[in-house]
Length: 110
Length: 115
Image (cartoon, rainbow over all chains, first blue to last red; front, top):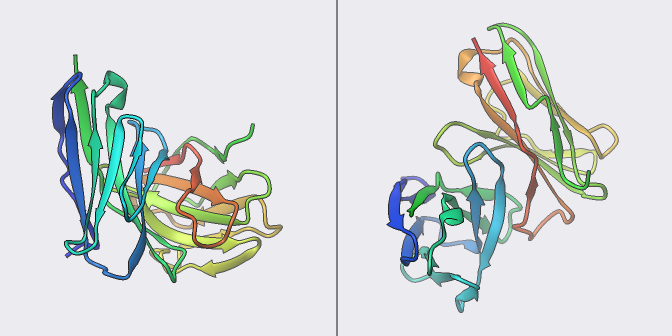
């Protein structure tokens, strides 16, 4: 089983809709969680960190469920520019290494 | 520029050729990572430097891969006797602190194609 699993998609979503996707992880020692965004043929960029209590940044909401070992990303009022691959990333507290999911591809259609 | 710079952006090599990929991190960033990203996959860790010290090279796939950061700034990833399975995008990332940070700043990558 992979350490980090994501539905590869693609998720085809009409503009303005709300979309959510999850990422499951196997290492219960994982302490820090992040969502990165990667546009086609571009480098990954940090979208947001995920905090235990959940956090929001504009149209984006991230949640962490430690009991079930998953994190989620919800995008409200989706824009065409949200089309990208969203990568789930974990970090064990004792280790600088980041463990990356393969990403979920999101396509927002007009 | 202020970001992480990588060169070359694209490299086509014949099987068996040696290649060198360069990374110029953000000035003052202590940590530098090399990742390999295959199409449709997330980045796979190759190696990690803290200043000039290579603290982890566990992700290097074979002894054909070698990385250095002699002065704690620019880093070079060298691949000897390239094979077709080496074809991938090689991403360099840097961060200010050594640990406990999830924010890495990536370069645009070097896309290597081995024929």
